Amino acid sequence: RMRTVVCRHWMKGLCMKGDRCEFLHQFSLSKMPLCRHSERCKNTQCPFRHIKESERMECVFYRQGFCIHGGFCRYRHVEREKEDLPHFMQGNCPFGEGCHFAH
Image 1 (cartoon, rainbow, N blue to C red):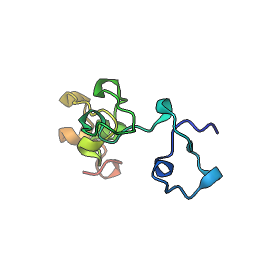
Image 2 (spheres, rainbow, N blue to C red; image 1 turned 180 degrees about the vertical axis):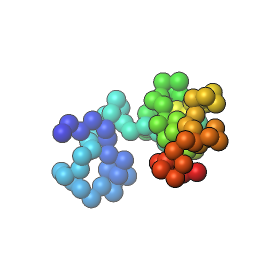
Image 3 (cartoon, helix red, strand yellow; image 1 turned 120 degrees about the vertical axis):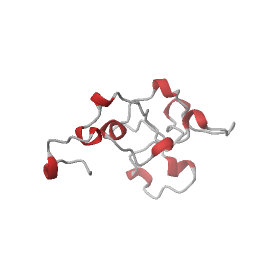
Image 4 (cartoon, helix red, strand yellow; image 1 turned 60 degrees about the vertical axis):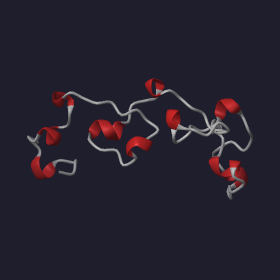
């Protein structure tokens, strides 16, 4: 498999996997991992990539109703109209106990 993203642990000198690591062990500006703080990053020396929120992919977990990462999610949280939300968030889930969402 091609190593397309620089290893976060290697950057800190902490990667224990060596040649078995699936991430890149060399600096490459175009292959740096995304900054967890994205546009909110205040570190002028931050080595990670920063992508505008409008260019990030949509978070599938937020779209389904809940993302554990909240405001620190690396994906975009898109507000939906009520009719676009999962049934349980509208208060009328037809799946009841068989629904795979927690409610």
